[in-house]
Image 1: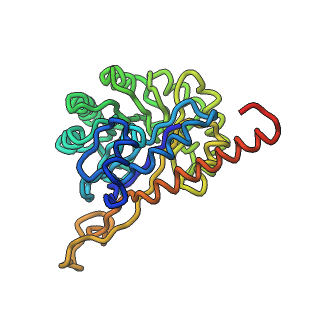
Image 2 (image 1 turned 135 degrees about the horizontal axis):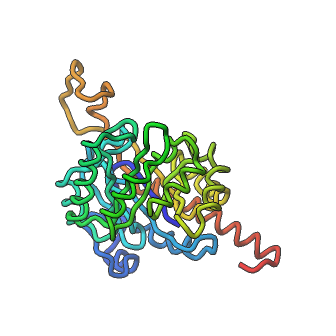
Image 3 (image 1 turned 30 degrees about the vertical axis):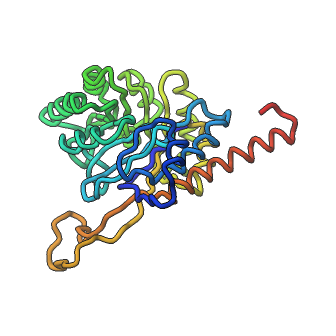
Amino acid sequence: MKLRVGGGDVRSRESEFTTHDITTLCKGARLVKGDLAIAALASEAAVIRDNQLFSRNIFQRLADFRRHVFGAVGLKRAAQRVELCSDLLEGGVTPSVGLMEVVRSRISIGLHSIIRPRAGDFCYTDEEFEIMRRDVEIAKSAGADGVVLGILDASGKVDIRRTQQLVELARPLSITFHRAFDMSVDLLRSLEDVCATGADRLLTSGGEQACLQGVETIAQLVKSGRDRITIMAGGGIGPDNAASIIERTGATEIHVGLGSPVTSPMLYRNPRVSLGKADGREYDRTQVLEENVRKLSRAIARRISKQKQSRADCGAPS
């Protein structure tokens, strides 16, 4: 199972961990200075890894650095993939070259960059498509391990031809088709089209605003896509519903946003000017807090533990 945890940087509390603790948990994983925030999750990751509902266990974190302080990304065992983007207020756009290079220099885990030239719909002009092509090449040269992209045509169908061109250009990187899929006209038809592009993974909420409303559709997509493409459920997932959504959909990966607001360090603030599209957001920042990630992992682990116990009580093999 994979967790995608989103929305800013991770606040560390170094006093909670000793060098011995970190060494024991990391087992050789390289740490960035100050990146002790989610070390405690390694032991919880091991708990989840033991379950037989999922073939894999990888914590993934989404990082938006447009307004955020560069933060900790994690450990090999607690976080194996980062999806990097800018401007989460607009759903995420392509990160800058500088951002990709700095993040790549600071982490040894997987780095996936979103390829989205602008906010808004996913029907792109020829000029925008050329930008996407160049951004794919830049992501490769910056050391990315994967890219996240998606293109639709004006009728709401997956643009197979142009998406396939980006997939081929991006190889040997891993390819995720993002939630442009949820904006398409026919999800089951679009699943076949995404498979035809050669993408490795599909992120979806089942065509709804949140996964809870789309669980039946996601489950159908998981069943239909089995052995062809990985379905990653994403949208409105948190500690209170993650385990249930995993169980009900059969998804082996989930996309989670756990951003918490933090106070801007600015002492002087000009209330007369707002430079962004969202008024008053200049002084808003978010962080992914250690305790929230831990809460999520524990919630999933508890559900798994209860399922194991239930099977054991019924005499079923675990």
